[in-house]
Amino acid sequence: MNLREYLRHAGDRISATPASNPQLEAEVLIRHVLSFGREQFFAELKRRLSPDETALLDALVARRASGEPLAYLTGHREFYGLEFAVDDRVLIPRQETELLVELALKFAGSLPPSRRDDVTIVDVGTGSGAVAIALAHYLPNATVFAVELDEDAMTVARGNCQRHNLSDRVHLRSGDLLGPVQSPVDIIVSNPPYIPTDVISTLAIEVQREPRRALDGGTDGLDVTRRLLRQAPAKLNPGGLMLVELSPDQMDKAEKLARDAFPTAEVTHADDLLGLARVLVVKTGEATVRAASS
Image 1 (cartoon, rainbow, N blue to C red):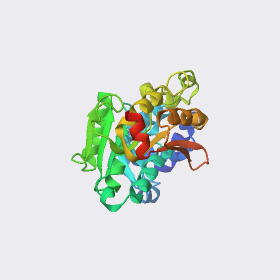
Image 2: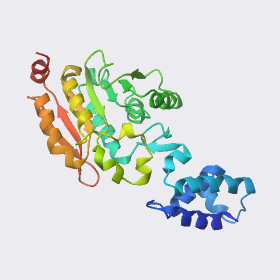
Image 3: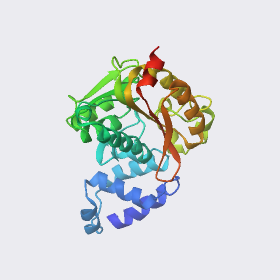
Image 4: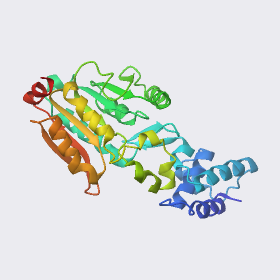
């Protein structure tokens, strides 16, 4: 079977899943096995696959057809212009999470030069390390902490830090939420588990294959966010920023929780590319931190 024929065959098999573009996913798997770029792939569509290549591809296509996420099969995912290693120990970085990075970069860029050159950031629940590493990459003078409770995920994050030569700038901390953060920081970012427990079984099969601990946010999806907001006032500098990714239908409740935790802060939200409320935004002032610390 040549590449063109196998592309059609694999696309048909993958179409049995909820994949948005089975043909493209088939192409990605073929290029992954053959280590081909797109240009080489299309230039060699008449090339015949060897028996070993076919066997390897058949196994990957079968796994994808069973609902295993594409990123776990290829072992990597692009996020904010950078490549990250991912596997079933971590949540797959998603496009909507890039909004956390975008907002944090914008805020850091708005700081006075003296503070901008010494900005401190913590990524709570770092998973693969994608958010923390992207921030360290694009803010070369920032001090970035990445907190993760799960040791398996921490291993993946550590590997990604090494991959991007940022092991000396992304400081990995093992622990729960802001517990390992010793001193207040300028920016707190987090993509916590926020799927309500009862909803998880209704998600796409491939999403259910991701770590449940990274998805399950309790009865209303806000269990982790509540704890994070209780801890945050003591860990955020005056004039600081807190960003938390959530589901749009949770935002009203989350904003109320944030106002309770930060009585004098500016509490808003940012919309994603679809115009949906995606990120809880808390901007503190001097009085907010004093009130929360008293």
